[in-house]
Image (cartoon, rainbow, N blue to C red; front, side):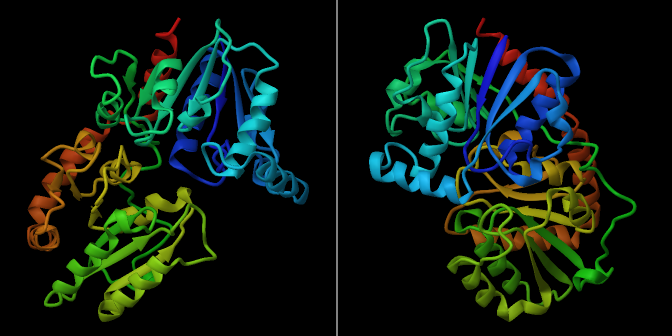
Length: 395
C-alpha cells in the first residue's frame, strides 16, 4: 500500500529533537524499512539536525519536509494568519498542515494517517478510494471535541494508545467498532538495568547511601511535581531520601523556565540539599539517569494516556509509585507499582508510599523483578507489528 503520514507539525521526524510520538513513528518506519511492507511517505517539519540522517536512505520510507522556522517561512506563516486566522489549531500548525496537504493531495495514497492531529480531518476532501486513519496519543477525540462527528465519520480506523483513550472515543459512539488499541513500545535494549553508567551519583551531588527517587517528564502542574516535592519536605526526618527531577516545561527547552518551574524551585528551597533539577536531558542519556536511581515516582494528576516514562522506569527495573489516572493502570501491575488515587489524601499517601519503599528494600527487589518481567511485552517490535496489523485491517 501507499501510505502518507501527516505528523504533528511541531517536532521533526526522524525524532532528532525527541518526542514520544515522533519516536514511535521512527519505530514503525524502521520496521517497515527492514521488512519492506509498504511505500510510506512522512510529512514533517524540517530541522537541520535531520540533514544526512541514515533514515533518509530508505528505499520504502520517504520524507517530505516543510520549512517553518526560516525568515521566509515566518513571513509566510504570519501572512497565512492574517488571511485565514486560526480555524482549528494554532496558526503555525495550520500553516504546516496546509503546506503539507498541498503536496499530499497531488498524489494518490491508499491510506492517509493523521498522527495525533485529528483536527486535520475537518474540511479535508479525502478521495473515496483513500482510507483516512486517525492515531490518538492523547485524549483528542471525544463528544466534546470541536468537529468530533465529522472527524469520527471520516475515519476508517482510529488507533489509540490505551483502552482509556478508546473509551473516550466511545463517548461519540458507544457501539464503536473503529478503535484499535496499540499499547506503546520502547527500546528495551536501551532501557534495561545497567551495571556501568556514563554518569555517577557523585556527579549529581548524591552519595551511594542516598535513596534516590527519580521523576522524568515535562515539568508541568498536571504531572504532580509540586505534590512530590511536598512529600519530600514532609520526609525531613529522613535526610537520605533524595529527589532527582529530569525535564523541562517543553521537550528540548534548555533556555527558558516558565512561571511554574520557578515556583517549584522556590518551593524546593527548604530541601535544596536533597533535590536536583537537571533540566532537559537528551533521550539517549535517560537510561543512565534511571539506572542510578532507586525508585521512579510518576505522580500524574491528569489522565495521562500511556506515558512512556512509566514503561522506561519499568524496563530499567525501578519500583514505581504512580496514580490511577488515564491509561497508566494498563501499563503496570500491582506487583511492580503502587497505584494511588489523586484525592484529598494524595500527598499523605504519596509520602507514606515513599517511606514504605525506603524502609523495605526486599519489597523493592520483588517489585523490580516483577517490573522487568512485565516490561518484556512493551518492545518496539511488538509495537510495530501491532501498528501494521491495524493498517492492514482497513483493506
